[in-house]
Amino acid sequence: MESPSDENPDSPKEDADSHDDPWINRVAAFMDRHEWRNQSVVFLVPTEDVVSRKIGFPFKDRRKIQQALRFELEGELLEELDDMRFSIDIRVLDQKSTEVLVLLFGRERTEQLQRICLERDLLIRSIDCSAYALFREMIHPSGTMQQFHEGKTLPSMDEHAGFQIYLGADEAFINTVQGQRLEEIKFFPNRLPELSAGMTENGRLQDFLYQFASRSSEETSTDPWESLQLELEWLCSQFTRHLRGRDYHSGSSITIHGIFSPAIEWDGIRFKLRTFPLPEAETLKHRETYQEDLEESSLEEDFVAESGVVGEEAQDSSPDTLDELMEEASRRSEEDAPEEDTLDLPPMVTEEQVPLITQISLLNLSGRQMWGILGDTREALYELNEKHSLSLYSDSTPWRRFLHRNRGGVLGLVFFSLLFLAGGYANLWRHNQSLEEDLRRTELILQNEIQRVYPEGKDAGIEAALTGMSEKIRKRRQEIKVSKTFEERNYKTLDFLNRISTLLEDPGEFRIDQMEYGKDRFSMSGSIESYDRLQLLKNGLKNIDEFKERRIVESNRKSQEGIIFRISIDLNK
Image 1 (tube, rainbow, N blue to C red):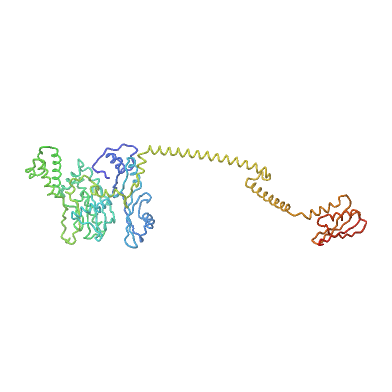
Image 2 (image 1 turned 90 degrees about the vertical axis):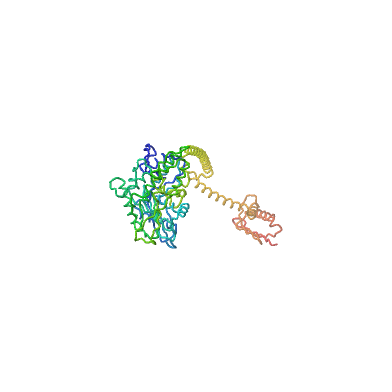
């Protein structure tokens, strides 16, 4: 989008839309003046505001290039790289080298464009450099076919570098094109915008072009027209110097665009200003006057008023009816069909060195309304509507625009979502609190039980108490195991001793000094107080099941301590 330089809109109201940048303020005012809402827009920013760099790398790995590119740009730029947005176009030259064309645009201006578009429900399809848009106009399919049918020559892969020259009321730059690739963008600072502004009373481009083309080169004055011609002469010298420094060849193609394109010419050696007044100025005036009369006459139903064609011959044969007027218009259109300017080359330029020049004629500008580059990039705008590698910015998704248009619904949805989440969080918090209460209660019960069964762990923690209880339980289990082992043992010997000890029920002295009980023999020796009790002992041994029907051998002697005896029983018989 572009704001014409001849319009002077009312100053926008000071509100939230105003910004410190006059450039952004003019864009916002232009949008408000046209009442753009709920649309997609493409911004063409001036080449002056875009920084272009071409950097070479000795490798072609895209990942390595992207990593090294920031370091290269930081060394190339005077500005801070963090303050710029950039887009890149990577071109592989051969197996070992790569070239990268970088376009950089201010991040702050991009954010401001985003803001003013968001406030007006506009979707940014693309932000592009005007020089790149002019390049895309050249390679656009429809534009290419049109130039082919018109006999114009386009640069090919095998030809020398071509040059696109733009000389308009808004800016001046040169695109260097090689093999249908944009190689370089060179901007030339100039005063054309301020000099061409306000030179016509009604701001019409056609009136400005006629006044400019009809001025004589011999007129000398200090008015803006003279300053404008001097500025064009200076730009011609700059264009010539640039082409000489860019390996210009006689086979190189040159295309010249912009409303000031008819004012300059290339003679094969240098650019220069054409001789004024331009010969096609009067033809342009006649055509414009005739078109105005044609528009007025179309409002009449039965006849047309006398045509206002300038010139005595036209007045003698003016059409009287609408059909005759249409016939005359058709005939003059065929006679005055726009043709390419034929430039007279100086004698030093031979036929083989004739450059391939495509230049807009003054008659080609008839009916044009755009002062700036939009008049030369009509076809490219459709292609720029889609995102491409050198696009400075593009809204990939319209979510921000959707959020801005549905603020109420989105805020309501967010509010209810937060309310729902808060309710869920509250329920979760209450559930966690209940679990914590249960845990505290369970811990208290556990501590009481531990104190009851394990008093030693009263002052210890639960873990220590449980460890102590586990150790105590282990020891107790071991004791029980030992006890069960004793319980399950055979107590035959103890039972035998018990029976021996109960043989003599009556009280008295009875002592057993030695007793032996084996598989083959039983023997017992000791002392007893009398022979009667010794006899009772022998009879008791005979009544024991193990000694029944066994021969008992007894020997004794009397002593001061009593009767000392020894009893033997042979168990083999």
